[in-house]
Amino acid sequence: MTGDEPTPAPASLPPAPARRLPAPAVRVRRIQEGDWSAITALEAAAYTPLGLSEGEQRLRSRAAVSPETCSVLHLGDRLAGYLLSLPCPPFRCPDLDRAEQPSAPGPHAGNLHLHDLVIARELRRQGLAQRLIRHLRRTAGSLGYERISLVAVGGADPFWAARGFTAHPGVRPPAGYGDQAVYMSQRLEAS
Image (cartoon, rainbow, N blue to C red; front, side, top):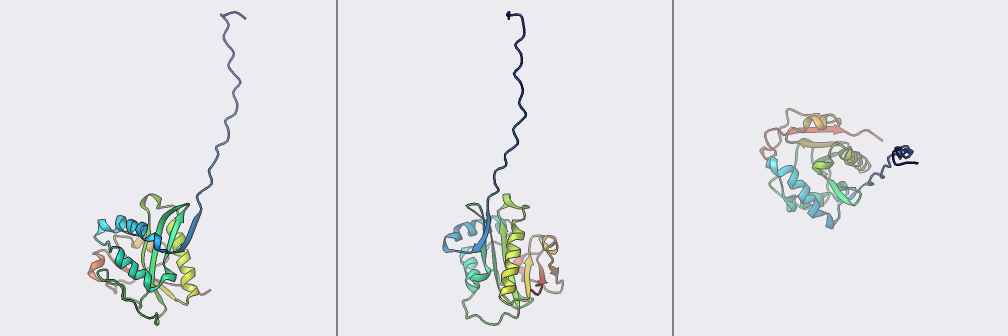
């Protein structure tokens, strides 16, 4: 071999198959005391721009009414979302300006009010909200609820309509929910 001859190119190897890392585990569980700082931060990020942020005391008061129907969603080790729901007569909703008053469990008229559902902004559109909604439906059904209601705020009514909730135009939520607030509900399927 002389210095004038080109050096042969090394044999190319086929590209290694792309290795996918396992997706972080998603789990839903009841709210625990150590969750409140993350819940409050998620709530403030979602609702402060709409002028609807309630603050930790009012959020805690709603969860205290019905802890079995309030959940957090973890994506891996991260608290990525939460859901607060409580018994409420049909066509009524909690007052955003007041904390819930502790009371003995009473009749709920078959209605569970989904007060709040938030997923971290950067994790939306991945089906995480749907996981919380499915969990709530199962829980509500097992506790004897027949209907779930909510107030869609900030133009979110199309999101909820796509998940089977129906608007009730004759029901006007309190002014504290904003101009675009829409009261909606859904009958639970019998198991």
